[in-house]
Image 1 (spheres, helix red, strand yellow):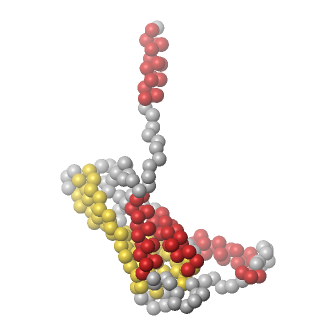
Image 2 (cartoon, one colour; image 1 turned 45 degrees about the horizontal axis):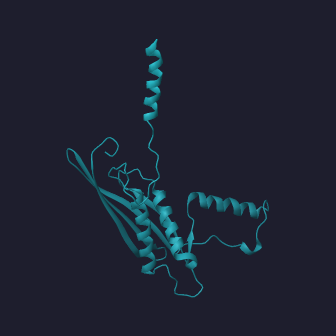
Image 3 (cartoon, one colour; image 1 turned 90 degrees about the vertical axis):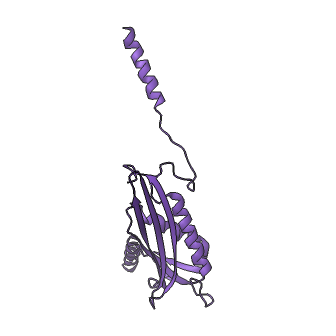
Length: 199
């Protein structure tokens, strides 16, 4: 009888001591989860460095007063084994460029969702299903440049260790001449003990 009373108390104490770890950490801090993969600080640093380099290079500055260069970001091809969400990198880069360049350039939305929304809204306006702003009638803007990129990796493995060297390259291409007007790469290398999670 005494054991049946003690057992629930012991179980309750055991459950209370098995709490979860929930804490907010700096996105630029080393990830405690580890693994030889691109981490949050890599994404933030990469977007910041690429945006700063594009701005300082000056290719997106128009020579004519009052004219804005137009460009869009198309794709980031992932040739690595990292299952990272590519849109996370591209969205961060686009945000950094928008903040850095302000109204100096026109950043166009060429995503599938963006183009579908434009087509649907224009069709509704033309059919007079919704009101149209007479001052906002015009053609869909074309791009002067496209920004695209690739993620590559070099993996080496030994019995207990795994190293991964990442190279993320971005390119800005002139859409009239096909000339490559700017390119740069972000590099990172990780070494970790091989595990089920990071293998």
